[in-house]
Length: 166
Image (cartoon, rainbow, N blue to C red; front, side, top):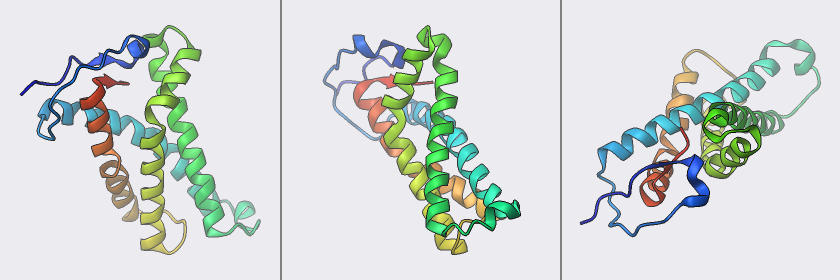
């Protein structure tokens, strides 16, 4: 059984040569690297998501606008994705040699992961709290679910293509 192809940086996206390998879910080093990638995505998504929910929760003016719970959650998801893309772009600038290429890679490599992460975090908040609301005991649950949901996809992408963004 062949092992995973050499892990290249996402900086080498144009030079990728997919080497056929026998896919397994048991490669500890790939799980470790994909967990690291997922952590950075979670940090970026959480900043925008939690910031939006907190703003509507703690700023009376915003609460008085009468936004529905679903509207707030959709805005929180959008902001979470935007902050994650911004964070990943910032991290990749030095590796990629410029903001344009870093931005392209941040969007292309991570969007599916970010959408899955944001959807699961907000669904968890809605199921537990019934509304977009941050409390000290819900945040760790949201973070756990937000991490676990895209992690297998990130493993698969890393294992199949040998690409990592961080």
